[in-house]
Length: 122
Image: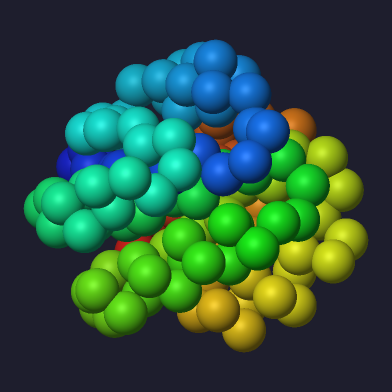
């Protein structure tokens, strides 16, 4: 896949937005349409025409699984990937049960994230 991936990024809990921004922008092949902290205006946020939803989180929280669940319910055909800073323990099962297509533990290289996103979209 050579086209730019259009993503919206939901930031859950205590995730460091600047770390996520720099990591996603490093690859130059991902266009982030919008970042959202929390669930305000969630319906409008999810309505954007994107290829993928990325939910970035620190440790496991109910907010993470709620964001995944809402994204899947609004557009079941659009993949949802969770980026977890710190240990994904306790998150993996809940994220997949909520409908996530993949969970990536950070740190990861920008190339590794791009590869994983391409695989989920295909």
